[in-house]
Length: 67
Image (spheres, rainbow, N blue to C red):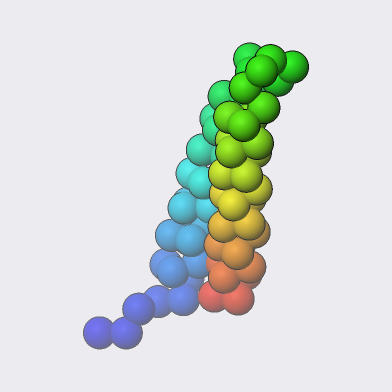
Protein backbone atom coordinates (compact mmCIF):
# COMPACT_ATOMS: atom_id res chain seq x y z
CA UNK A 1 0.00 0.00 0.00
CA UNK A 2 1.49 3.32 -1.09
CA UNK A 3 1.75 6.11 1.42
CA UNK A 4 -0.31 9.24 0.82
CA UNK A 5 1.75 12.39 0.24
CA UNK A 6 -0.91 14.32 2.15
CA UNK A 7 -0.54 12.13 5.24
CA UNK A 8 3.26 12.27 4.90
CA UNK A 9 3.13 16.07 4.72
CA UNK A 10 0.85 16.20 7.76
CA UNK A 11 3.15 13.94 9.76
CA UNK A 12 6.21 15.96 8.76
CA UNK A 13 4.41 19.14 9.82
CA UNK A 14 3.60 17.67 13.21
CA UNK A 15 7.17 16.55 13.72
CA UNK A 16 8.48 19.97 12.64
CA UNK A 17 6.21 21.62 15.23
CA UNK A 18 7.51 19.29 17.93
CA UNK A 19 11.13 19.97 16.97
CA UNK A 20 10.39 23.72 17.13
CA UNK A 21 9.05 23.29 20.65
CA UNK A 22 12.15 21.35 21.69
CA UNK A 23 14.36 24.00 20.06
CA UNK A 24 12.71 26.71 22.17
CA UNK A 25 13.06 24.60 25.32
CA UNK A 26 16.73 23.99 24.62
CA UNK A 27 17.32 27.71 23.98
CA UNK A 28 15.65 28.57 27.27
CA UNK A 29 18.07 26.28 29.10
CA UNK A 30 20.98 28.53 28.12
CA UNK A 31 19.48 31.70 29.59
CA UNK A 32 20.45 31.24 33.26
CA UNK A 33 24.04 30.41 32.27
CA UNK A 34 24.70 33.42 30.03
CA UNK A 35 27.26 35.71 31.62
CA UNK A 36 28.56 33.05 34.01
CA UNK A 37 31.77 31.07 33.94
CA UNK A 38 29.86 28.28 32.13
CA UNK A 39 30.33 29.65 28.62
CA UNK A 40 31.20 26.09 27.59
CA UNK A 41 27.69 25.00 28.54
CA UNK A 42 26.09 28.00 26.82
CA UNK A 43 28.05 27.24 23.66
CA UNK A 44 27.02 23.58 23.69
CA UNK A 45 23.36 24.46 24.24
CA UNK A 46 23.41 27.03 21.44
CA UNK A 47 25.02 24.48 19.13
CA UNK A 48 22.24 22.01 19.94
CA UNK A 49 19.67 24.73 19.32
CA UNK A 50 21.17 25.48 15.90
CA UNK A 51 21.06 21.79 15.02
CA UNK A 52 17.41 21.61 15.98
CA UNK A 53 16.69 24.74 13.91
CA UNK A 54 18.33 23.08 10.91
CA UNK A 55 16.30 19.93 11.47
CA UNK A 56 13.11 22.00 11.72
CA UNK A 57 13.87 23.77 8.43
CA UNK A 58 14.63 20.48 6.69
CA UNK A 59 11.38 18.96 7.94
CA UNK A 60 9.39 21.97 6.72
CA UNK A 61 11.10 21.72 3.34
CA UNK A 62 10.25 18.02 3.15
CA UNK A 63 6.66 18.78 4.16
CA UNK A 64 6.31 21.37 1.38
CA UNK A 65 7.81 18.92 -1.11
CA UNK A 66 5.31 16.25 -0.08
CA UNK A 67 2.33 18.59 -0.51
